[in-house]
Length: 615
Image (cartoon, rainbow, N blue to C red; front, side, top):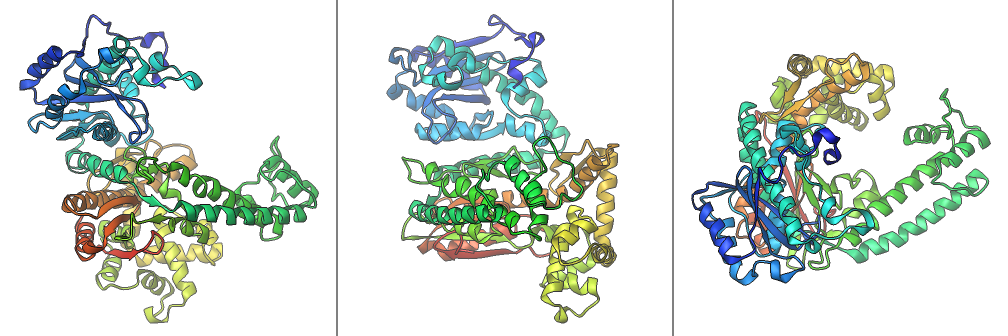
């Protein structure tokens, strides 16, 4: 953390140079509101009792409308004499927070919005978020936290919260902090958020990110906050039953593992496993050298060994089941919010460099859907009551459609325009066969290639994912690129553009920098080249679903149905039975018309009693 920097990064401004005011009486509040009468924009920050917005109680609010001058309003500190009287101040505070003529902004303002909603307030309009601005300007690597940004742009070291609440087991909550000590910390947050906007906003315009930022990322804040607050109902009994069944499976596999190994050992110890596989059972080490802890027992090694012995196969199964059980099946019921009875995932806008959303607690993106057990986990996500069903809408082959649009490849464009089976079409092109005579095996190879080649897969890589050997894979890739010349040209052009400019862009101008694109390190350079090819496609798909979410959210304003989850190219809705037809039209239009491409964009929609069966 940059807060704990060296002596040279001690705060440059002393308390004398800034004016941080504690607004703890009605006259002081009136004075602040009078000062804000002609203000057109104000930075907001909240102090709370928890980093989880949906469990946090509001302790205080900070406002700043001029660099170096900020106000702190104590509302929920333990010393009641120092707090503003809630009954008398809630109306004037609410008026300020929702005054349409004053633009509001913050640092990760989605959090403040949810906290204020819980306390009975709203923020409107939201015009800027410094964390999001930092992210669209530089999406990779750099930290977007307030402390890091204050240090980066102003060489200023902010007061760490640990000064006030401590760390570790002795950590207190903010409500216990003395108001006089809280003022500087809280007001400083609003002050530096205000200052940051003045340096970040011009950068957004300079980089031509205006549309992406103000029309997509900022409006999405409210959409995501609404989804997080809504949450999703989870069938805890079903997960409990699944957990018990899995426990039985794991115990059985454990017994089988001991039988194959000839003795009991700690299955989770890679050192002990390595000894059994390579010393006791004398399985081939494939020319690898041993580390201090023994030979590697990672997935790749075990998958190779599984072809010649049952033990590695059982270990893989054991690891997969144990991970699913601990990460999802046992963890999700613990995430059920006591007040709402639902699970409220957090959607992160500033993590993935491609522009995709990610989620935590639970991480929905990582629930494996390629395995039967992974799919069964989705069955636990259910509608709120018997008057609702889940509606699931999924973009059909959206990345390949974007690829067709960006590459302008005629064969690909025509295949989509004629509504052909795109994988069968690829197989027909590569194998030189009639599209009606394609075997399932040919189609499988083509399907893998369609998704893998734009990720820069090698002949060896393709052979690992298909039934082709490396020689056949090499021929397949060469024929593929010859049959789709637009794709080959696009791949070469993307790398050339990245080499010359140091970045690539999506259709909506989202930028991703590639510092390694001219690296002398072969591996680093190859990785950057793959990103140069893939980011414009994956990033455009991410932009597309965000545009769709904003449109759909607006149209659902007064409906009983709610949008509740987003995973990659998929949206999930808690749909009221009476609104089925209406919602399906809104969702289909919103998704299919989000970004106009040269080929049709298709959303597949399903309805069902849970997330799995709505597909």
